[in-house]
Length: 401
Ligand SMILES: Cc1ncc(COP(=O)(O)O)c(CN[C@](O)(C(=O)O)[C@@H](O)C(=O)O)c1O
Image (cartoon, rainbow, N blue to C red; front, side):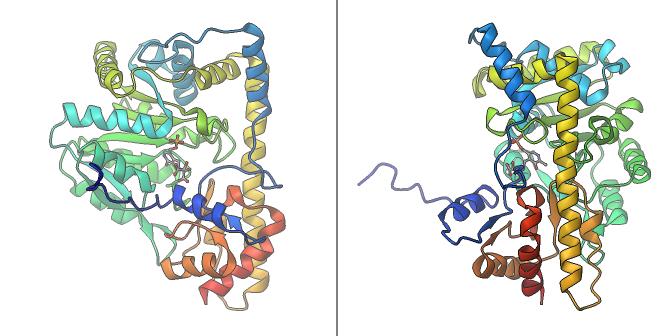
């Protein structure tokens, strides 16, 4: 009998497992609206042209493949902090930000969780209800206790702002508050600028530590600056904060696993100490990060022509998602004879739409219509083409009633 007899079969991942089920389906109308991965109108994966240009540059240069330092590629770390805060942000000149290249957003969140576990014993992380499915796994595995703050209001299919504020207020002083910088996953519902001000007030009041997860900067609105405005608002108040970044969506570098963890501190000395301890955590975890994606980001951001072209491509991607969101809404309204108000689909921002479909209705979408989505009712609009909107509208209406 095997020595591994006691290891049971793990359940499929609620998000990545959907793609596995999609691949196994042979139905010709099948549609994968599960994982948050951008597809073109032809439903093909998309490698940005600036990425290809940067890679050709790198090939011509014939660069080495030596180990990076534990904290990653310096040119990348500089570029990623400047993209986040703005190149002229005084925090950067004052060297008050500790930036460590992480294994994309997931790996960066995990590094931060390990730092919290080690240096903030007993501190809790508050996560939104609902939130990205992997947040709970990351904090559980890092042995960081978490609890939820109210976020989604099923009655209005909108933000339960009062609930969110009162839960953040009620949390023990000095809790970490995990916030989605833009394009909240899975709801697509973001606080307004005014609401962000109030969220910052209550976090300051309670001496909490803001912890932003920024996985869609530039991808949600099409503007790098607009999508970073919540983080920059908190930083401008002089708050210390953590920010995990990812280039999976906005630069299409999914499998290159490129991201960063940033810790804005009140002094350069604190930032240096924080960075040194993040390195100490990373070394036994994976030693040092992959170089390819870091060089792509550094080359794209470092070259004005490539940087501008990247911004154009982000606007294109965000634009396609916005137009497919509108087309889906129009298709549903044209077909649905009830008075149901579907406008929440239009108000949502970013890659996802929270349809309001419950578990059983989401199952019907898959079992009967071969539309693959997460069981919380989320669909990734990035996987939808204009041509498929009619079909999807039929499936949603059939499943809703
Ligand atoms: C809020 C949030 N934070 C972090 C990540 C991590 O992304 P990465 O490790 O690739 O940088 C995602 C990606 N979430 C998904 O788009 C999704 O929700 O489908 C998908 O990539 C995933 O891994 O689940 C995310 O939505």
